[in-house]
Amino acid sequence: FDRGGRKTQLEQLRHLTEWSRRVLLVTGPEGVGKTTLYRELAATLEPRVKAARIHAGLVNTGREVLSAIAQGFGVAVPGDANLQHLEHEIVAHVTEQTDSGERTCLVLVDDAHLLDNKAVDELIGLAHQSALHLVLFGEVRMVPAVERVASSKGVGWQELRLTGYGEADARD
Image 1 (tube, rainbow, N blue to C red):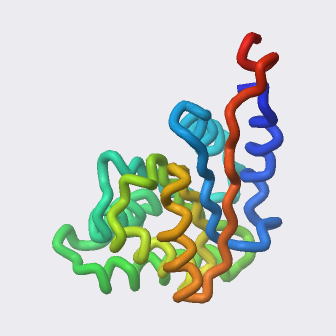
Image 2 (image 1 turned 180 degrees about the horizontal axis):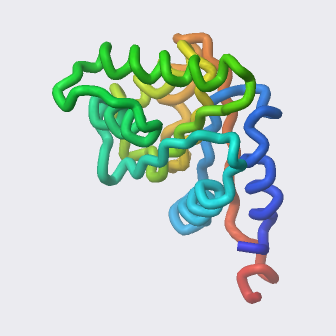
């Protein structure tokens, strides 16, 4: 993890309040270290960051993802809550947490390329409706979908593309 600029990238990710955009897509080919970066970020967040951690291999539909976010933030919602109710409760919670300026809410999604289109729409919609920060760790093929949804909702986003290690780093 120490090689290939990963520590620098981790430090950039950890400073959420300095991001000019609230949606970040971390991409790269399989095996480049996206999941490792996800785990390092999740384990080293600042105390004032409230995070919901999601693995898209386990939850990948819009309703599943919103339920996981509510659970990750500790928001009590009925088990049979519909999408609109889940969305409303999450937005209200994020607003309550962030209005004081003392807390930042973050959703981390590993293997985000496994999300269905509705889930991507819901996630970016939450970022549009609130001060939620979103980091998606996935394959490069996600870029067109994120770009389409983000521009339709007027949400700023950026991509951080991880590259493989150089010859010397790979040897080490």
